[in-house]
Image 1 (cartoon, protein in one colour):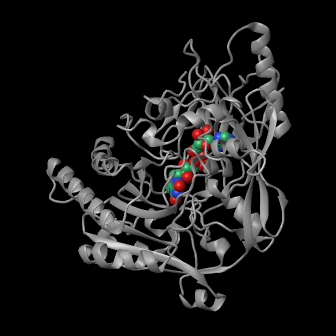
Image 2 (cartoon, helix red, strand yellow; image 1 turned 30 degrees about the vertical axis):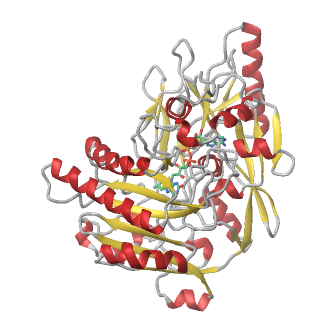
Image 3 (cartoon, rainbow, N blue to C red; image 1 turned 90 degrees about the vertical axis):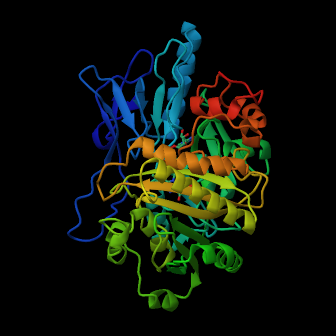
Length: 519
Ligand SMILES: Cc1cc2nc3c(=O)[nH]c(=O)nc-3n(C[C@H](O)[C@H](O)[C@H](O)COP(=O)(O)OP(=O)(O)OC[C@H]3O[C@@H](n4cnc5c(N)ncnc54)[C@H](O)[C@@H]3O)c2cc1C
């Protein structure tokens, strides 16, 4: 018995001979409402997958509409037991028939720009299966220090549920909360904090199901090697159904952002000082105007936070930023607004639930650099952008191009961590945003040219891509970007011996030349 997706995630249940779904249906991503203003447009759940035509073939696409795939079926289990039963039935059917099992892949909310959630095709070309864990949602256990949460829970929902208990995550998240806990952990979702890694690094225990449907409860003390593979595995190391994350009491934050018109002074003098001064710090650079926008946040009392006079609203509702018409008809793009406010932690950390009103292209590289190297790399990137602009007959780079640099603490707790082996990495993120809310994305070739310029520079500094974001398929000069991918494959073979959860893009770029097994 298998639950299959129906409109608004109301699961239908059907029996089919091979345990796979065939009914007409649609799968929506629905997170808590972003807009708070009474006159805000009605909140629309996003269609993730739907039966494409009368033949009932599935069609799915990611957040930005830049990745699409057509799975053979979409399976939406209502519980861990139902997921296990599906996997066991699929394994048993294959054993009885001798027909190899189809590949499969979990999708979270498909917020990744890299097609990490696209299942591989079977050897006869049949598309694989999409597994959606959206119904596995909610807190299963909570103490003063930790919460155990099901993998399909959105971060937005988790923050809401914790706030009701006067708790919040004891880890500073990144710029969006409309994503699943399982998806965020699987890719190493990060914010900006020199001393702390991405969310995977704070997961000390998790539950996963292997592809035969067996349950594995893993933790750092009993299964350190498996944890180093499974906690950031891009969906290739079993199916995570729950994780434990650290929590603390709610606290207040004070955040400040300002504009610097002299980018040379910023890069050479202010930036090194700001990095020394603030653990939680990041900056934007707008290549067209050569303006820099540093931003920090620090703990504060409730009174200090309120005194800033900038309480948290959704990104779309930040009217002050909307006045900055120099940067587009809607002012500063939504990606600039995600944490420009001071408030209690649950509101400060969550006000940008989603940014779908303004689509963007996005790619990111992690790189370990000293201060001089960071300034030199930034200048080389800006020169590259200028060359791209001129090659397109423009005097300056696009108004809609934004460079964003954050800092992530490195660690060796995840074998696939792009900052593996370094103390801290700068994460250079490039965004090319739609010219206005709800406008079309800029053309692909424009994005590819700007991103290519940045990627070339950062690969030259031994940078590694953020797995969930866009990067080219060019094989790196150092196999696997120097990550221990063979060890990763060995650990994960235990949970997926047939490589049903493989990802073809990862195989092509990260496994090439490493000696690790490919399909
Ligand atoms: C507007 C926007 C802003 C963003 N900001 C940031 C940011 O600030 N910092 C940052 O680091 N990233 C950021 N991201 C990227 C985001 O972190 C990733 O795309 C994240 O994976 C999205 O979660 P998801 O639930 O949509 O996962 P998906 O994109 O659906 O899946 C990601 C991967 O996780 C796997 N997966 C999902 N669930 C499970 C599970 N239960 N078990 C095993 N594997 C699983 C999938 O197979 C896939 O390989 C942003 C994305 C957007 C669209």
